[in-house]
Image (cartoon, rainbow, N blue to C red; front, side):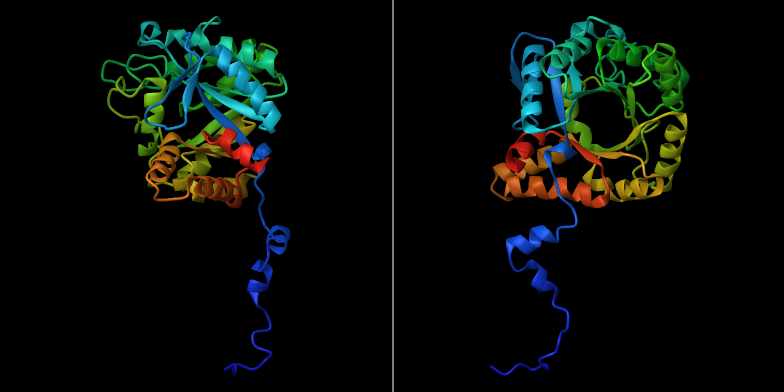
Amino acid sequence: MTTPFPQSFPATRLRRLRQAPWIRGLTAENVLTPSDLIWSMVVHDGNTPRIPVEAMPGVERFNVTEAAEAAKRAKALGIPAIAIFPHIDPRFKDEEGSEGLNPDGLIPSCIKAMKDAAPEVGIICDVALDPFTTHGHDGLIDEAGYVLNDETTSILVEQALVQANAGADVVAPSDMMDGRIGAIREALEGEGHTNTLILSYAAKYASGFYGPYREAIGSATALIGDKKTYQQNPANSDESLREVAMDIAEGADMVMIKPGLPYLDIVRRVSETFAIPTLAFQVSGEYAMIQAAAQNGWIDGDRVMMETLLSFKRAGASGVVTYFAEKAAQKLG
C-alpha cells in the first residue's frame, strides 16, 4: 500500500512510546504505590467485629479488636497510615459532643490498640465534633443553629490533646473553624507533643459527596440544616489558597483537599503554590459511585479504582485518603 506521506513524516511518533508494556512503564510520569495510600476506616464502639455500611458496598465498621487486626494488615501491605472515623452509640451523643473528649472513649481506645498491634503504622485522627453531636454539626451551635467559631475551637483543642495523649501520630482538624490550627499547635507544644503532626483539612468544601459517610458514622439523620457557613463554597478556588496559607502559617504540617476527584484543580493549585505535603480525600460518595457502577456491570471497578487513585498523583497529591486502600494495595503488591 502506498503511503500518502513522505517516508520522513512524521519525525516524531508518540505512539512509539506506547507500543509495549516495558516502554509504557519506563516512560510513566507518575507511579502509584501502597505508600501513597491512607486507609480511611470507620470504627464502632460495639462488640460486633464488622458491620457492613449499606451505602458503601465493601466497607465495614470495625470494632476495636478488628481495627487492631486491620493495622497489622496495613503494615503487611505497605500502607503507611490509617485515618480513623468513629460511629458513636447515640446514647453517648449530646449537643456539645462531649464524648469526643473522653480519654477512655472509642477513638483513644482504637489508637492504643492499633499502635500496640502495629506501631509502625501511622494513626490519623479526625478532630471534629460531628460524630459526637446530636445535631450533626462540627462544632457548638447557638440558638439560631449557627456554628460558633471560637467556642468550638476551644473544644477542638481539648479533643486534639485527648487524641495526642492516647498516642495518635497525626491530629487532623476537619471542622473548618478559623484559627483552630494555631490554637491546636500551641496546645500540643505546651503539653510536650512537639512531634505530633497536624494534618489540616485546609480546603474542605460543602459537598454533596459526603452522604454515604454520614450514614457510616451515624450522623445522616442527625444533621440539622447544612454546613455551608463553615465549609467552602464549591464555586471558589482562590479562597482555598488563602485557607491553606493561613493554616501553614499557624503550624500545619500537611494539608488536605476534600473531596478529591471534583477538586483536582485545587490539589494542583495548592501543591504547586505551597510545595507542602498535600493530601486528597477520595470521599465516600466517590467510592460509592464507583462501587455501584461496578456492581451493575457498567464499569470495570478495579480498573477505575486504580485510574482514579493515579489521577490524584498526577494532580500533585503526596498521598490519597481512600476507602479503597486495602484493595488497591493488594493489587499493587
